[in-house]
Image (cartoon, rainbow, N blue to C red; front, side, top):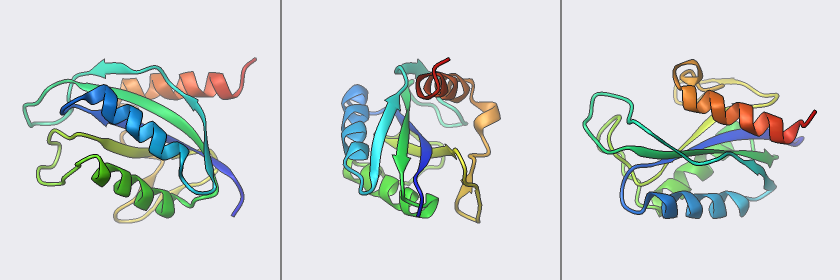
Length: 140
């Protein structure tokens, strides 16, 4: 499979949020057939959804990868689980949340995986982080 760039969102609002993001970045850097090209700044955001919870730390990375979106999703779920992620409450608090926001050249429309992520337009922080990463990857 040819190389592509995946944009992966990282979020945490439980425990040592900065540590969870740091460990996620380390795990992403160790993925097979992949390398981290750039990281956005970390920002604190209000939680999304109906469940009362604390603020999130969010960040996005640009990951050059030969992993398909499905393969990357499985790796992200493995990393989340290693950081203590459980899926008990939809929109609930989490130690680590990893989302494939988009790939530069691929898209997917499956029941359990949609790339680009359908919530991009609703998340201003993702738009800022994508713009920051694109500027880092394609300086003028």
